[in-house]
Length: 137
Image (cartoon, rainbow, N blue to C red; front, side, top):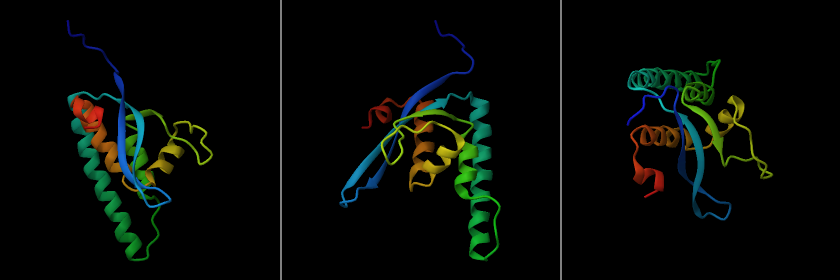
């Protein structure tokens, strides 16, 4: 029997390429606990995503024109992802100590090139239940 359960969440892998100190290409991997949104919430998230894209573009334009901007792209992205990301595993400080999940640390993670897009792709794969993505194929 299928059960309608409110407020579901699931752990899902997030992968993105990186470069090590010796110049080797590596795969970075963490796990995020995603809030599993219903169909209406996913549509709302997509609409909000378009607004986020517009705000980030406005920040870029303001920077090019020399105007000061109140928010950074990573602040905007962290606020947006706060709707779907509720925890993480495998994120550590430079000394190897695990970092707790919070808005400040999420913003720090989002400063890493490629992470924001990889999180969005992982969330999409999670809510679509794409097993091949989960396994990393």
